[in-house]
Length: 236
Image 1 (cartoon, rainbow, N blue to C red):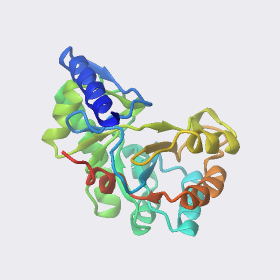
Image 2: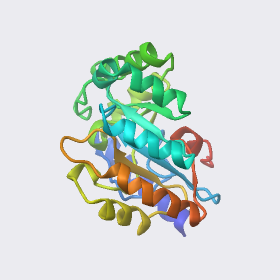
Image 3: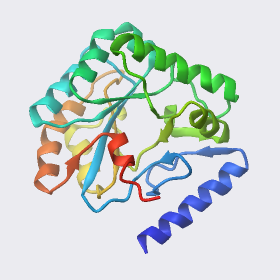
Image 4: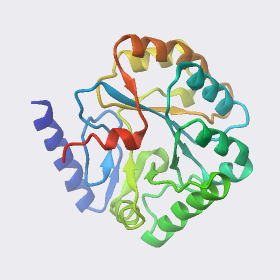
């Protein structure tokens, strides 16, 4: 039944794409819409922690410390401009065994851009990461999760998978650590992609929440993997 619902939801998204524009539906658990992933069905209780908008001069380091202490790898969707400013943090993310994803060069909304404009944004961020850590990004998260047929086409042309999410912590709204933790624990299932942020303007409680959240998820039997590792479990 769950897989049937996934196919129905994916079909609805494809119909929207054919009309030219599609926004993410964060709590829709679909395996894949072409190469757009918000959740990946698996029976191994694999989940992926993801962090957007960094690196931040202090919050990224705090999050990396928590991940290191708990032996967890995650995926960081970095903004090219921020990567250029903080190359040492990009290298630290990579050296920690984490995956680095592409969140465009300057965090523009891609949905109404041409393919050429989208490619320019993707390649700009890709170059920033390559220069900093010698790695090429291969997963793309459109800012705000907003994408279109042009985004999908540009990503495919450049060898990217588009990655959304299925559990939103809303940590960007300066939620308490308890609220962030509950947002995950009350909703998480096998295959989820969890949205967090390592760059927030103002006070952030994400690292504090992770200190409580990760051990509890481990206790429940969940295994943490990168987005690309999770995608590799997708049964086409």
